[in-house]
Amino acid sequence: MRFTTREDIELPIGEVFAALTDFERFEREALRRGAEVEAGGEPGRSWTVRFRHRGRHRELVTRIETLDRPRRLATQGRIGGFEGRLGLDLTELAPRRTRLRVDLEVLPRTLTARLMLQSLKLAKSSLTARFRARVRAFARQIEEGRGGRGA
Image (cartoon, rainbow, N blue to C red; front, top):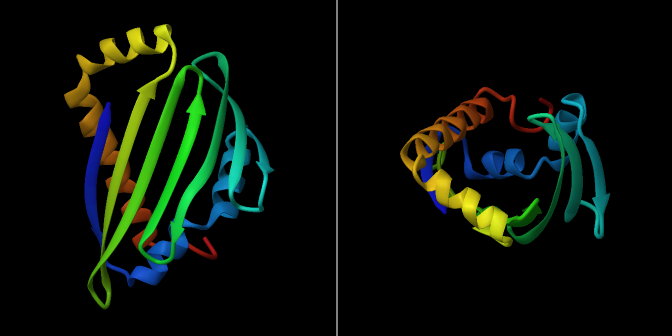
């Protein structure tokens, strides 16, 4: 299943990229929410995050595939029977305006995950709306300075 959206952000491309790659801030935020975060491999290139969601222990293993400053960040991850790829592409529209394009692809790797994904396809339109709303809210946080350095 694939989700794609785009948001325009009223900041220069370099500031938006800095906010998207502030991995230490994301780690601190996960820790504040009760997750256990373990960085692995090269610093800032892979993580294992353990947390509780809907009463169950979950483990997300993710790594950076592409880091092309200041245009692209792509990650790959696994959680349960799913594998996902997240692509963040930036386009400079003007000196102080950047377009963020987000592409998320979720793939089942087990029979159970495949069955779950089939049932989720029935709710794809509402899931797409929620995905777009989350990306929009994140873009506004970046604009307000809560998604970048020093936030």
